[in-house]
Length: 150
Image (cartoon, rainbow, N blue to C red; front, side, top):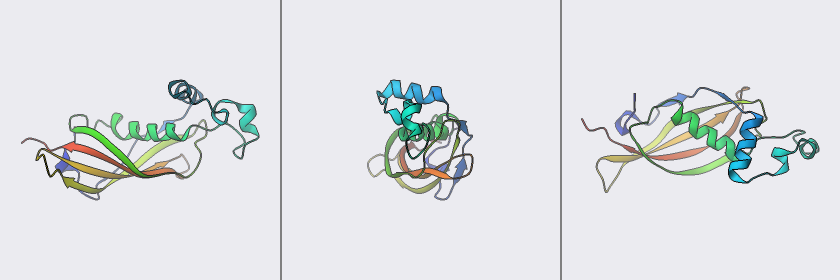
């Protein structure tokens, strides 16, 4: 069931299913982006880092957050028009191979479009957590969402 602009009042919140970060995920992300920084791809290099082992790319976590919020839930499949941006995104802790990440998100602001009456902007406060309930990333995602034609 798709949610529309009017179904997203300030304060409404969700918790996504979790996803485990694998070595294949990190390798595929490195190949896709061209980011083969050895902290992510070389155990020998990473062993001497402050983390003691390889960690996932921070942007991979951000990407997983987006997928966990929308693709896995289907909540905005019919109503989302565009992803508008990210505000104040912070990377608070590393993502280790084998971590299970999930997303908690809440509508913190919404406003109708001033130029088109069939849509509005919805801001979501997003927290990415690991299996220990530690916040590893957080920020605000803004989406352009259609109003349901009734």
